[in-house]
Length: 64
Image 1: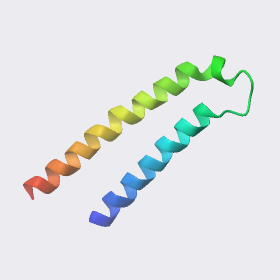
Image 2: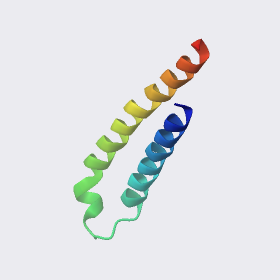
Image 3: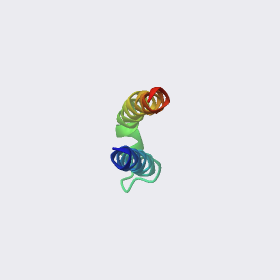
């Protein structure tokens, strides 16, 4: 069970970093103009899902 939680956290962190890197260094000239809202929305989604998941993991292990 612990290994699955660790692997899941690593995947989430990798996906978040990859998303931010794509947003910072896009390959298209107009990328920043067309996708700023999308990048913001996606970052918020990651934050809203990852932070509570991390808190719940600590609560789970704290009560165990």
